[in-house]
Length: 107
Length: 183
Image 1 (tube, each protein chain N blue to C red):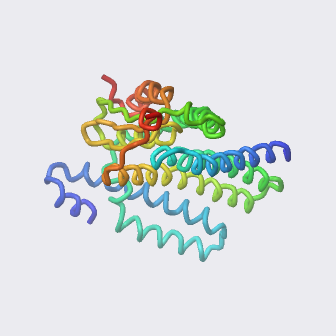
Image 2 (cartoon, rainbow over the protein chains, first blue to last red):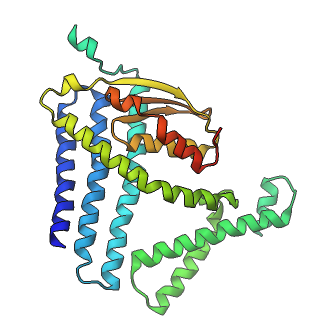
Image 3 (cartoon, rainbow over the protein chains, first blue to last red):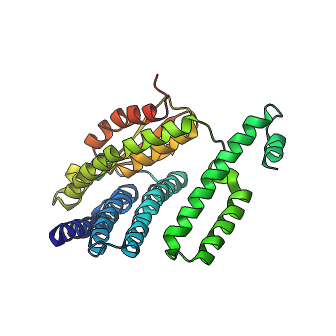
């Protein structure tokens, strides 16, 4: 049981780390949003699954309620994160920012 | 009361069916509010339960038309098909997340990525289907929906060739099947 929890939480940490590194390494505004907006969603999902399982060690009504609340976090994050990403991209488009392409960089 | 309010906003056609519809949306809002209260409070005293019923009744009485503006029977089928769609979506998200993780951590990342904006037209009509498809595309890593308008025209920013090619394909079929809008 503990091993499953550890696996889930370390997957979450790995994805969070990848997201943070991706924000720094990507070349432009739009491609930075890819790791920022989405690796975080899966990282949150996996970490919350790990925490909820850990929380259910001593099964009772109280811990079950806490686990349901944890899953509410996932629900709202996965609802809000694509919407926020979409809004940011739309703002960039309206401001007229061109997206990075390979050819421009090579020339 | 609810029937009168709905009858003013819509045309005065069938009062009994509009009353039934608004009663269904009232009931759904009530149940949802009550569940939220129970999960978030976690205390099952009689006093608090009575307060929960009263407050969720008040909220759903005044705001029943916000969450479920038009309750129709086909929404039940849509809901169940949407629930069946969720595991596939999560699996897609996991698969594509590994791809993006690989791309970000690759030492020669700038050779791998090839950002491009693709435009495609779908046959989706209802707003809910378009929103579902747009959010699914954004949730799947490698693609972000830039714009999606009422005619079903999508503009998608994709990070590399592979995610650009696989973009509308399977997901569009599944979403249009959920909302019963297959051609």
